[in-house]
Amino acid sequence: MLINKNMKLADVIHHDYTLVPVINRFGIHLGFGNFTIQEVCKEHNISTGFFVIILNAFHDPHYFPKERLQSIRLNILIEYLQKAHTDFLEDKIPEIAFLIEKMPGECLDDRKTYLLIRNFFLEYSTELKNHITKEEERVYPYVLKLEEAFLKGETDADIKKQIQDYPISAYEAEHENVEEKLFDLKNIIIKYLPKPKSDKLCFQILREIFSLEKELNEHARIEDLIIVPKVEAMENALKLKGFGNG
Amino acid sequence: MGEIKTVIVVERNYLMQAGLEAMLMEIPGLMMVKTFTGDEVSLAGHIRKQQADVLILNPLALKEDPIVFLRKLKQIGKMVVFGLMEKETPVNLQSHFSHVLNVSDSKFDLQNKIRSVLHQDTRPGNHNLLSKREVTILKQVVLGLTNQEIADRLFLSIHTVTTHRKNINRKLGIKTVSGLTVYALMNHLVRMEEMGGATK
Ligand SMILES: [Fe+2]
Ligand SMILES: [Fe+2]
Image 1: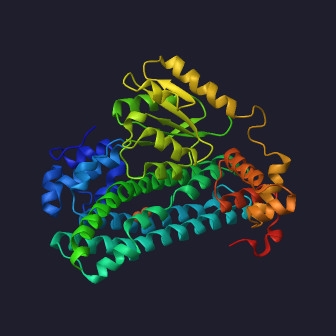
Image 2: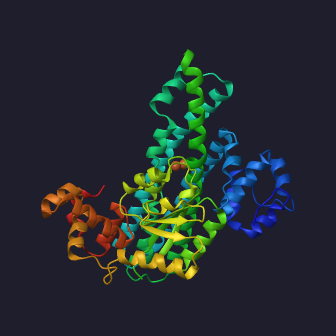
Image 3: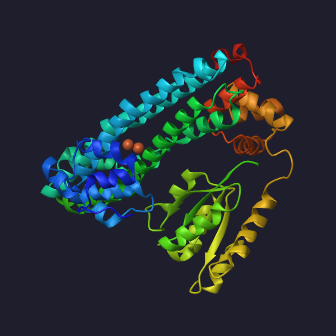
């Protein structure tokens, strides 16, 4: 189903309830009555076009209107990506950690196995946190500054230095796949748990991991396919313009 | 069932992508993990990151010269590449692929082709079990040794060690060292005490 701005937001959620955290990222919360997407967006003062694209992209992995996404201002995209980061670290990760904590009572007799899984996930959380911190401290601020410089059409020494020291291509080259460990964790739970007492909790954990994985994929797709090429083009344009007379 | 093989697709048409996905889904042991349209910046790099077992590539989707692109893929290593051929694909391009899928082939033929090619690549029998040698190597990996150190200790070439490691990852479905550590400890292949300072 292709979502459009004239649909009622409630109908969209009926169709795909996994979009709830996505709309939350835009500051929209449940209880929106019978309003259409457009009306809700207007009330919250957010770009309807962007909102609809994100809903669709999240709903259907095949939907990825590159040109339209690339026409959106970087600061809007970055704001969205940052909210997703917060979601990952403050909701998703603690939720999985909480479920893992319940393993000893509900599904594992063996304390050692539990500790192994807990530590493994802890390690993963740290990795994800580092990945995100780097993006927020180093990459995103640069992207925002660059866009500003690009729109104003003027570069300062600071920007020039960054374009040379850490261009977006350097970020792209070291932008690692943060889903790898999650994949391992899924297999450990699916294939190698020693006789769990009950599958119920494992199922909940798997559901959360799959959902986090889906969101991470979606997120990385925007970083790799939208942010990187867009920033690269701006860098090149600025280089041509500013570096000559600077 | 043995280990799952991951498939990525480079194809510009949605209908073709969806068709491929539907066809692949029916082959047990295959999982389509990613589709590219072909106009991604540094596509070869994205493909490398996926570490997939199989690539189905429509050369007409590429922005760059397919032959140059295939050369880049060669450096990625052991990934089975199928060329997806359309009517308009120049004949000389076909010869650059060791395996070819024709879009006009029937579903049965396509699936058989894929199965037969991939089958050569899997050694039949003990799909899930690690060989003795692999267990030995797994232990060393978990204890924190580098490939070079393992090669020196076991009198193997570094190339052999890398191959073993790839096979271990593939058989277990676990790629990271910490994942392997969990597996090894859970299965009592190493003891916690042996780990000493190796963890972290
Ligand atoms: Fe990110
Ligand atoms: Fe990222």
